[in-house]
Image (cartoon, rainbow, N blue to C red; front, side, top):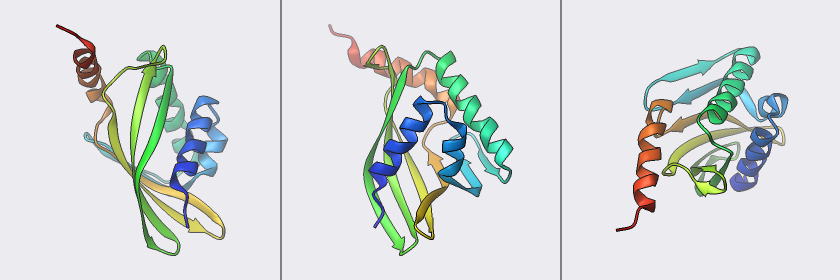
Length: 142
């Protein structure tokens, strides 16, 4: 049985360490990323490595200092295929920086190793500014 929260915790550690090789070891190509704006399919390791680095640079440039993934559901689709839903929270100075968003991840087991094959996000990068405004509104008091 897949422990999706442990898998996602490992992903967070890899992102914090800016470990592209670690990230690549957790995915299987071809890998598909679906956002509110577009769907991209990665077939080459170098393209996935660049995607990882651009994601890290984007987080830094937008002022995010940390993130977390909290798994809310895991469904086994067979012995070697699973899907799960998780919530991403992005932080600045240890405070929630934007409204959390949900994603769905699909993983396949090859031998004894689970690897992600696709991720679908409910937002695209363009939505981060609106979500920053949403969390700011949540923190205001009358």
